[in-house]
Image (tube, rainbow, N blue to C red):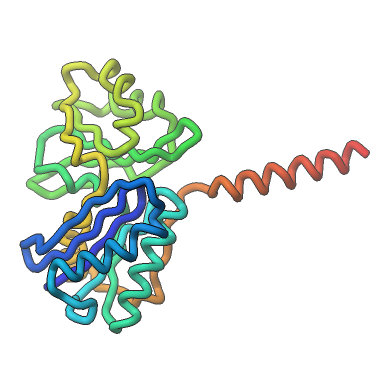
Length: 243
């Protein structure tokens, strides 16, 4: 099976084509330009380097969230357009699951953290059991102190923290866990499109696929624009009550 996969859930864009158990091409790009400026040239370059056209893909894969609102929308829209254009199926995966799969099997706890802004993080906790990654705690938005307290309550054989949320709060996490913390490679701080592609193959075989038109972004919180609008409406109501 040949899969085209992309992730734009963070400030980094990552695109890959994988075939069976091989990475044909993978690109990770962190640039001053936005995803709206970077992504389509990156997609075109990926197909060119691999020597394939979109119609030669068996499956398209994308992360559906959580992550940055604009990035997720751009990623999902891009995959939807590519897949619809060549009438191919799609698989979408949770960003945290893809992030957790950047590690090799380990007996340590795996905590995926992504920056949720406003001093909060998206948190999901995993553990390998018989080489299968098991989700112990589904994704929630939490403050870091609550995450640290939660992890301390279930840690037994050490812990890995992954994601840009770990990178953002690294000093506090290292202070909290000391020798129990295994430092992860810099490459483990973002979802990898190649990992997404391989996971998409497995999901397609086990659970099937969807049509491109069925793709949806999975938001766990309201966007900054929505929060500002709600605050503005609240102030307006309060002012009317005071008149």
